Length: 183
Image (cartoon, rainbow, N blue to C red):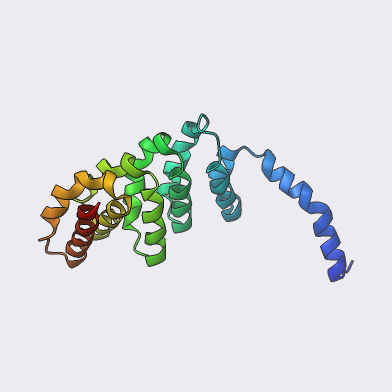
């Protein structure tokens, strides 16, 4: 049987609601661990809008997402957790480690998302300033600067980094100090 383009479109239109409905009956927990790229990405988007009372049950699954090999899964997990506020607390060390991502645009997205956690993430960012990974240190500097005044407690550690031997660390610390000093 040969279907025309119009016939294929009709079949898609008829079956689409059933396929979408089938995906929605699969629990969100299962979809967050799915092997299907699209199903998992959609689940990361959905989990970002769950009610605060439901958020703690998804945090362990999102922590696993932070550890995924797929960078897009890690970014989606950070994005979802950045809206969890206090409920994201168990995930913060893993969230901060995503600053090791070296892809420019992805790093900028991670920095913006982490900064949404505001003062909650500052202690972990200060600890990350001692990381041997210069990308984590630089990203921590950038995130602290974006957080602004609530991150002023990082100033003593940032001042110590101004003389670091790694240029990206030195530059990141200087830039953060300029911003935090003005706050």
